[in-house]
Amino acid sequence: MVGILSVQLGAAIAKGLFGEISPTAMVWLRLVTSALVLAAVARPRFTGRTQRDWLVVLGFGASLATMNWAIYQSFSRNLLGFQRTGLDLVGVAYALLAGAAWAAYILLSASTGRRWAGFDGLAVASILAAVAMTLPALLSAGTSLWDGRVLLIGALVGLLSSVIPYSCELVALRSLRPAVFGILMSLEPAAAALAAIVVLQEHLSPVQWLAIGCVVAASIGATRSGSAPGEHPGHRGEEHSATPGTLAT
Image (cartoon, rainbow, N blue to C red; front, side):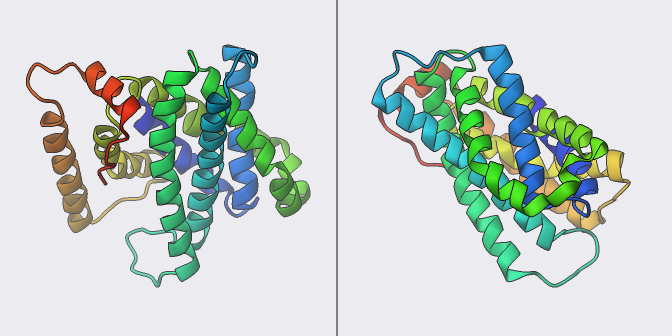
């Protein structure tokens, strides 16, 4: 829940930068902030890792970069809200790509959490994602990227939208099945609506609130029935390490 609220607050703040720097540069600022903070806190150990460990964390880093880059590309083309407007098909395609990368992120986060102690895997994945996005960000941003205000807001967004939520999710996925986690994440629309009200003074119509309520109700029902009676969540996590489950969306 902390991760959900944090990432939506960060997204609301990030919206103010869309007209000043490119979505790619915004994503890079997020990833760099995440990489620096997590590397300083975790001080990951790079030696003694198996090839499988590196393949998992490399995939995790790729999913982080792709998920963030694609959803910001979609946001910059389709800012959905109260007013009915046309949809940019390229923006829709980016949203679908972000959804696929998000599914990969959930599964790979769980696997990374099992193979890398503490926040080591998340720190390494963030470093890899930041490095991968560096050249595209520098080519697309121009001189506006180095404006002090942009850097400060970008760092704040990085803390709220990357460091805090990814850390919370990594811990949660060590004992929570990815299928249940995916359902819980459908609470995001309600958190996004609240962040928009508080930060942007943007409000939804009654029908839109009803739609969000339906999603939240479905999430609560699915979560309550997510574990069999007497079953400890950790047991499910251990089972999942051997057999990937079905991601519920």
